[in-house]
Length: 256
Image 1 (spheres, rainbow, N blue to C red):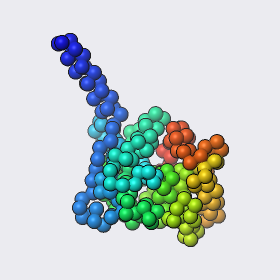
Image 2: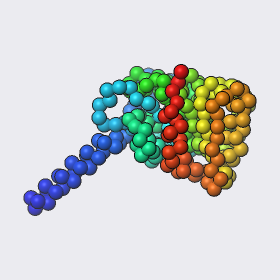
Image 3: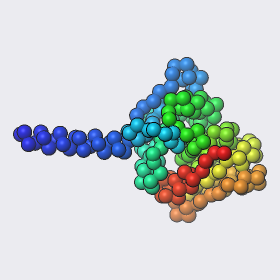
């Protein structure tokens, strides 16, 4: 019995050590005052970060979830955001921090992601996390890809790089097109953008991402490009976030 307990304790210590090394998520929360101003967001958000104390500032990746993550249970977005966190570690781009907010149900009718409210969250993160403000990266999948387009289209000054995945370009649904496309494109021309899509995507056609990248280039964007995975559908995020290409490109960028 004693040997069993010792073995059990040893396995628990190993598990704790692995968790500390891998940096499982913790739940952060906006203050009541900030939450009142950012009503489209769940006040809680996930933070994936190394367990060891960070001596220097590190890059921040903000991940915006798809429609399946909408709600008031922050753990719903853990799997999606965790894939990005694992990818960063796998391809040796850590240390860094991944933050995943959650769009509330009340925001779903307006596309889910509201730039003004996300700005409130980002201001809070800058004050509470040890991040390099010149290396803030934005990515998201599906509805989160739309969120990347609209937030970057409103506030490109925040980001060192933006990577929408299978993202729509309008608030009215997967195939909607915003009337503000040219305005977004003009702003997105100021920041590196790498879009990803599935060639067989019937939910959000790859043409939406192609159209956005073309508009950015027309507006003078010199660092806008797209990768279409021809054999992937709307689930292209598995390939995108599971491959080195995104992380190598993203972490090479630094805001001037």
